[in-house]
Amino acid sequence: MRYTLFYDKAESESRLELLSFRLSMYIDAMEIFSEKAVLASEAKHIILCISDEQLKAILPALVNTSKTIALLPHPENRSVCTGLGIDFNLDKAIEHLISMPDPIAVDLFFCNDRPIFNNVVIGESFQLATSKSIREMRFIERIKTSIKSLVRLRPFGLKIITGKDKEIKTAVSGIVVVQHGKSSLLSRLMIEDSFVNDGKFHAFLISPRSFSGLLTFALQSWYKRYKLPPYGAHIKTDHLILEGQRPFEFTEDGIPLSANKLEFKTKRKALQIIPGFHLKEHSTEGSSESIYKVNALPKGETVAMLTEKRLPLIEHASTEEFKDLFQVLRENAKTKGTFLALMILSTLLATFGLFANSTPVVIGAMILAPLMSPIIALSMGALRQDTRLTIDSINTILAGLGFSLLCAIFVTWLVPLYGANEEIMSRTRPNLLDLGIAVVSGIAGAYAHAREEVAKTLAGVAIAVALVPPLAVAGIGIGQLDWEIFFGASLLLFTNLGGMVLAGSLTFLFLGFSPFTLAKKGVIISFIVVLILTVPLGFGFYRMMYENNIVQQLESWEEDHIIIKDVSVQRTKPLVISLKLVADHTLSDEEIETFKTDLEKRLKQEVQVEITVAVLR
Image (cartoon, rainbow, N blue to C red; front, side):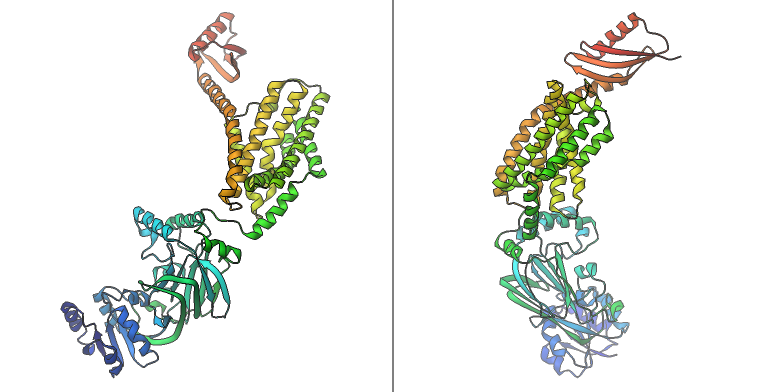
């Protein structure tokens, strides 16, 4: 096969000498490139070593002609080399050419009637069109790329008209359009069944609803396999029109331009091309089926919300989510007979279980309790400053707590048991760990209500764990006139209630059910209440740490072959410790007194000791 070589008149002497030397056996002539010279040439096989812009000018004129075209790398034709798999190294590209690969019929891809070799990038595509894989970048480069993209990111309104004449009105932040599965980094990473001669091209659209969602995907893309984000769309077609509400910036094979309408189309098998080395394995036809994965694109009111303002920090809930959730919460906030009945039954069950020192029975009461619903409704009412929802929720919660407290007191009067067992005492000394339980419970409850796919019964169990048992213990304290038990359990009850309301409100805020300007008053009030309650909880946590430190010191101590076991702190002021001494003989009063003296020296304070002695035989 003999060629005529057309080269750029600005080509260097050294490159021309290399071309002449390496291709001397395969070319009949070397001519300076001009459109007129190429079209007037009678050569059936031509080699073009020219820039991308020169190729864009001549290739449309060569459509459906009998000429076979080979391309060689040029300092300014990286786009066509990328699109047709031509090696950027001139020597390697020549070696491949003289190996005489068979020509293939390839499609020619157009944007506004201009050929596209690599891609068209509209708006800010974030990481979808980076020149090299984000995973290959150094850490600092990744940070810079991400920050630049975030600063420039701004959704814009767009009308999409597909090859099916289907019209979609949406908002996007960025679009990348490529011809086939080997035409760019993006397509190589994300497209498999797509080739240079299947008559189709691909459009990838991203429409993040929030900075948090965008950052989540960006962080995941650093270490996971590249894929389309959950807020992305993919269209594979042979004709596509994009119309903006205002002119938008875009790049065409790296050249910056501006327009408010772009029309993409392909001419199938328009040119006979000698494929590049990296494209030869894909010379067979691929699937010609169209793809329209556009469900993730925003529609309706969401479009206006995204285009009127800058991208929000967190994703705002849709109108349907608002409507459905508010109907549920308003219904849950109402005081109903079934709610009161379940509250009474769960408290009765918890009270009997506490007296029986039975953990399984107490857990059963937790499952039965219906307190989740009005508490989550109160979280939303406080968040959105909804007076009706807030008042209804508070009335329902107070009614449930009031009736349940009376039932716990009544059971305490009926049961002829006095004193406090382990189940009761464990709920009279609250600390910051209990607040953590309340916060997690509130998050779980709010999230379960906002997401239908989450089982709400799981959140109900989590919330009931934090409320029903201390409520029953508070009733036991009143019934036995033990105010230490009552105040301890009440503190735990209201701490957990406040923590759950605050956590639920923050969860709804994060999920986009209220703008911060509306939510800040309710959130601040809830935060202040919880902050006040954390003062006694902090003292409780300090006391727990103090007691745990004493136990750790004594359980690791052995005195004259006397083994210390089952250490527990009964009181802190004065310090009262209960423990068991295990020895190989009966301990005398002098030995016990000596042990007490050594104990006080070890703890550096006076101690009252409750000692049980066990003798090994």
